[in-house]
Length: 190
Ligand SMILES: CC(C)(COP(=O)(O)OP(=O)(O)OC[C@H]1O[C@@H](n2cnc3c(N)ncnc32)[C@H](O)[C@@H]1OP(=O)(O)O)[C@@H](O)C(=O)NCCC(=O)NCCS
Image (cartoon, rainbow, N blue to C red; front, side):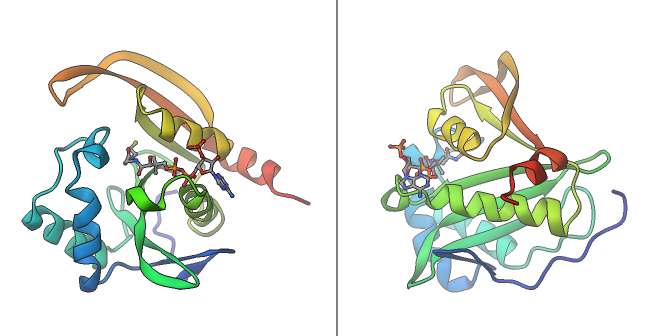
């Protein structure tokens, strides 16, 4: 996959969610959960300052998906109740047909299957619309909530690299989960 594939029309709709472009009005809710140390614990950087949240929301609102290194970043909202619940992101990696998925939810949105439903929609977009061959997720081995999410999505545990990263003042073991396009298609009900 070397040529850009056009993004489908946004928003995406699932049974209970709307996945849409970020807007400037998401800043307050985005900053509320990304300024929390518990949200940042397994993300590469520290909890965000307001200016970092402003920069990220601006970047997410204006994302373009045209070349390797670009990101799809979608705001998650409940279909029946406006308000930002979190985000799912998909990064176009270097190499043929490769992408990486990621996610974060506001604490009050966790524990209800919101990330599972949103990530499933983003995998569908990645495989069926954008034509990726393989999508992975790179996690801190201590991030059991993300590992459980990968398992719910049908992703395979592919590797475990001890002390791969050094962040938040300590060494961290990286686990990689992945799913191939064929595996995704095989999971779909007939
Ligand atoms: C990672 C993260 C998004 C996972 O959120 P989550 O709420 O655990 O995941 P889901 O929204 O899919 O919800 C799953 C939970 O809801 C429950 N659930 C209820 N209804 C469900 C449904 N219809 N489908 C799936 N799960 C459902 C599941 O049993 C599970 O509960 P459990 O945690 O008690 O086992 C969240 O912990 C987070 O934002 N963490 C901080 C940021 C972060 O670490 N990001 C990832 C970096 S790699």
